[in-house]
Length: 115
Length: 113
Image (cartoon, rainbow over the protein chains, first blue to last red):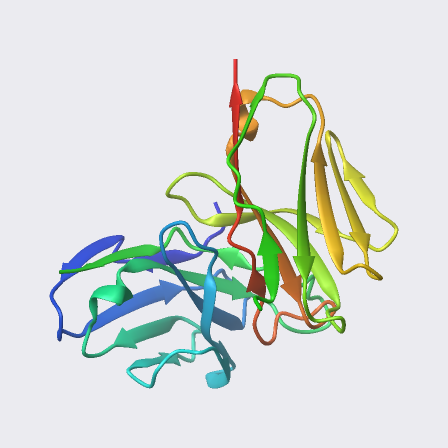
């Protein structure tokens, strides 16, 4: 196990609703990245948090937002849900610094279905 | 053009076969490269890093051709447990996880008895 936990594991929402996904990073890791993986596709970068600050954002609209807490856990919020938001949302933690290996450690993901 | 292109397969091979996956990347300034493995409905996990000199880990061999912007993964003596999706991953920064990783869409492998 990677030590990265995500909740909830599965959820169903309807269009227009809002959702919050949570991630607890691996102990000692200071960076959290969020990825969206649609069925049959590779993960797509949403954004990353490093030391509680957003550090880069992919091609996602502003209704995708997030934050990182002092303990390095993180939330992903999506407002005004659309059908195309149905996907597996992956949180990945990593250690940035002199000891970094460049490896990401993924949680098992939150599978969101929008009806 | 996508940052990382992979043949999605599927590849269906018998146990004991040798199978090779390839991917290409568009950003010539990319610094580090990986293969991740993703089992069905599970999270991606690092399989191996890819070094310019090529590297081997047991039955797995990864190669990088910077001139052609091409990465490969060779699996020898395939096992049933190798059945998974293999994701080619490119990082613009060496040894850093700041910023985004670019994932290919994955190549699906099924090994049959």
